Length: 113
Ligand SMILES: [Zn+2]
Image 1 (cartoon, rainbow, N blue to C red):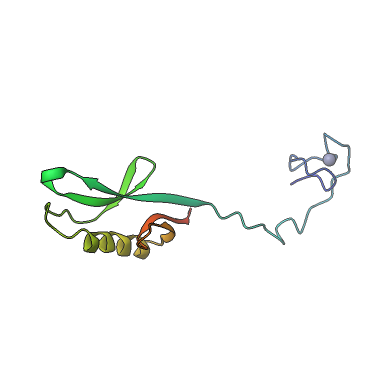
Image 2: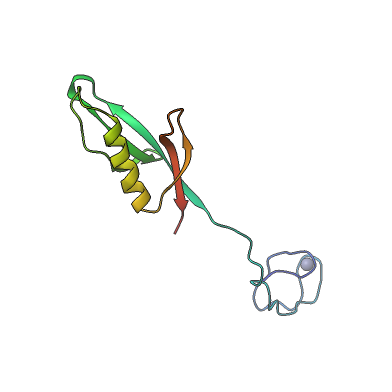
């Protein structure tokens, strides 16, 4: 519960606000207009190039890889691999936020649960 006057966070059993002295009344509609407090987690999509060994696309949250495309050999076409990874991410609830000049997502986010 918060003070109706100064919005200070109060203990549930408080009768008066410890900060401004306002008498506490039950704040029945404090949840009536919740602000949009959706928090998102963001992942970056990167191509991991292993040179002669080929490479793969990887989606990372911070330094943690959360999804990978299949690996390709060095002569393979990269684009289907990226699409493979992006479709996995979309199925997991991720939405593109930012894309490169070719329209491929480089950053995606989804609401935190
Ligand atoms: Zn107060």
